[in-house]
Image 1 (cartoon, rainbow, N blue to C red):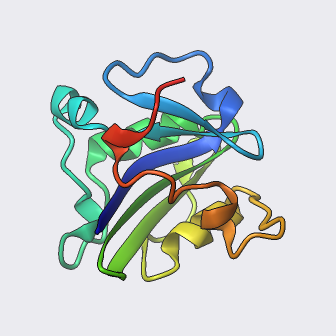
Image 2 (tube, rainbow, N blue to C red; image 1 turned 135 degrees about the vertical axis):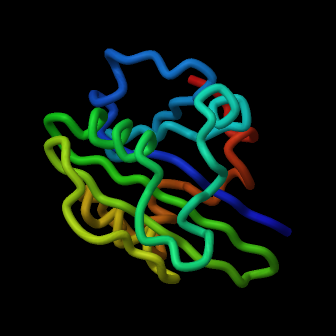
Length: 147
């Protein structure tokens, strides 16, 4: 069964004052929220689908980078991507703090957990940070319920 994720994760307060038409902001444990890149959101903004999963991706498209920087204005945010099929797959992330990217883009099998540690996620008795936030509950962005 396939799994995909494309989202920006930050503190819940980072999403309170901005409307993301076509996007779905979902509350997560540990005072975090996630802006899911739904099909509608991608189409409206003309964002590419999971650009870090392209071969040799070294950078985010300018528009996604700017959105992440804006969300991380006075805090931290992480852009994350993942895709799996039958247990095999890959992940990518870009980390932002106070309006700027903090390090090179990461693309490896633990990139999402790397991003979640950057955001301060506690494993809290779960297998890893990914499980602690329940990111495996739904298979794609359009399956998550709106809040």
